[in-house]
Image (cartoon, rainbow, N blue to C red; front, top):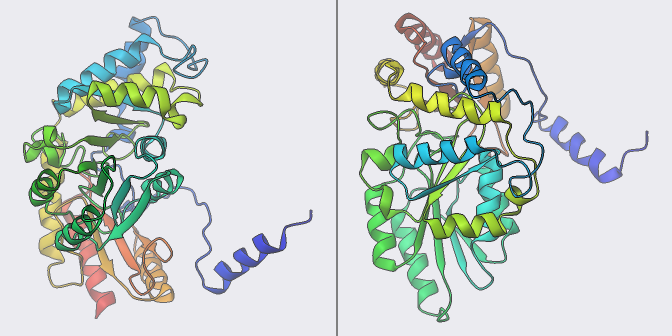
Length: 378
């Protein structure tokens, strides 16, 4: 079959750079790669409770049957959105099919022509794609550098028009670095500058907070943020996402977020799994186990070249695609599932091994992978 020349050339360039991606199946290696921080994705308890819940509610239905604005908005959606509001201390919640859908839906619809979006230079690709679909102007600021952000906001405000709005977006935990911004100072900055703050808590949910509510809850700052985004494919071990904010924001998204309007909704089974996973967060002891394992890993790797952070993600810099791929292969040969992260996902020269810590990793496994890494670095 004939292939367009430009597509062929791009693939060849990836091959030459040793950065061609491919799909692989899961392995039986010790898991230091997945986002299943609490083991919920393989929880028989959640699986069985979800199944029984659907039977008890007589929801033996495979699909949503349509978009949420047509036939797909089953009653379970409303119940789970109310549950999210209570759990996360929010006025409203709106479920989306995925974190990607939530982010492109929000950023393609909310900022208007003439508005300005400032985003952290390491922001997730889904947010970058949503920003790219917006009619607003957009500018990046240096990663976690609030002085740079403040200077950029002030420069824009000096020449802004009366109806111009400014939006700032960051993540509470960055997916490819595992670090966090100074959220308290960021909130104060945005308040003082009268700009709208959006925070993606994808990798904080289930990891921080008394019952895994996230960093904003831990800091008691939930109501100081214009919009919060929570995704369920990480610590919750299922699928979907939600945008939390005001009732007005929810109404606007229902009317203008194309990734919500023009797609079939989540099935009752998917929404029920979200509900049961949230129920489990309130009773599980896995969060405490995860936090203990994070501390064990930090202590075992304190002399290595890791990006500082207290989340479940820890990244060790191995500059060069060949170097990081070889390092990952050696760890895999020793029985540890560790993934190399290469450009363009991360900046060239900042390639790294990404370690995800889980509640189900044993202390022996954690110390063993740290020792194997230490020998690689030496």
